[in-house]
Amino acid sequence: MSDNQPQQYPGYQPQEPYGPPYDRQPAPQPYDPYAQQQPQYGHGQEQYGQDAYGQAPYGTPPPADPAAFPSQHHQATLAPQEPDARQHPQPTRPGTAAGAPAPASTAHLAPNQRARAEGRSPIIAPGMQPAVLTAVLAALLALTAPLPRPVLAVPVVLLQAVTAAGWFRLNGMWPARQGIALAFLAGLTTDVALLATDRADAPVVAIGTLGVWCMFVLVLQLRNRSSADERMYALTAGLTSTALAVLASGHLAAAPHAVSVGAAAVAVATLARALPLPSFVSGAIALVAAAGAGIGAGQLTGFGTSGALLGLAAGGCALIGLRVASYDYPSRFVHMTAGVALPLALAAPAVYVLGRALG
Image (tube, rainbow, N blue to C red; front, top):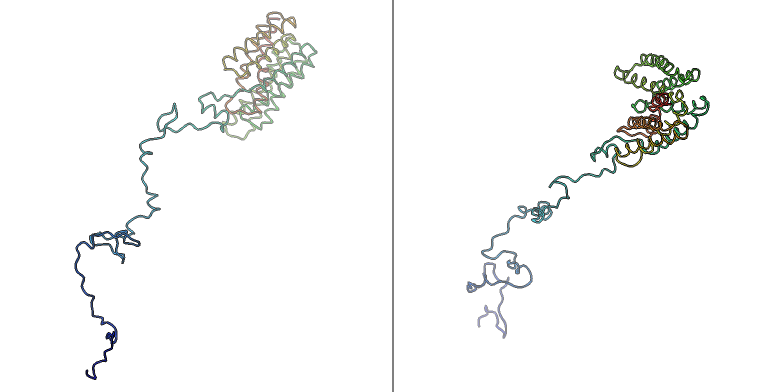
């Protein structure tokens, strides 16, 4: 054994001084054509078709860029409509066309707007409360008619005041204090003139008073600085209100029995017209009831069976007054003024004329 050779001991194996050289390669393994084709079943990424280093096995296409695919949130927003929703549309309501919107509820609309939406007339009648007030005022006229004329003048003046105020508001002119005051003063002047003259002179007194106060209404509108259309509208409303107030004084000029019969007919006709029935039915019932009330009141007052004709005429005038007081923008003030007064005011000429003719 040479001195340069390391001493050998049993079980000793020589080692490299600095470890295995870097250029030493592992021994080649024998080629197994089925090694890469065997599926790996175990934990980790091998179970998803990748090797232990995260690389796809040979023959597997590499994964695409993740940015090329939308995220789950993006896929949810772009998800196509389900086949059931496309193939099975929602059933429509009976009586509506397919795809047509369902009719909206009309409970929140005003009465006139609801009537238009439902295809009905938007004209709103005064109703039962104004009818009751008309009946009360008619009862006052009927009870005071046999008494001295100044006593009868009290309900007549009240009727004229309500008529003047209600007509201006019915035409949408409010406030109109000067016009209302002129119309009321025209009726009041007529009452005073009728009390100072005989009943037979009532037409002359009414025409004369109406002429004078129409001139006053014309002078009042000459001072109006509004447009020409507004002045003409105000002039028409002022003249009509003045004429109605003067006509209402006909109850003061008519025969006492005729006033009682006519007032009873108007009261019954107004109440019957306010019943919740179809328009033509309630109108027919109102006329029949007015004729019956005329007969009944005629028997009590000595007017006789001719009160049926007077009651029928007064009831017809009352229905006209109610129709005039009905309009498409209902106002409680209008219904409680014009709706109360116009049936009695329009019946006054019929009461005066037929009372003289039949009495």
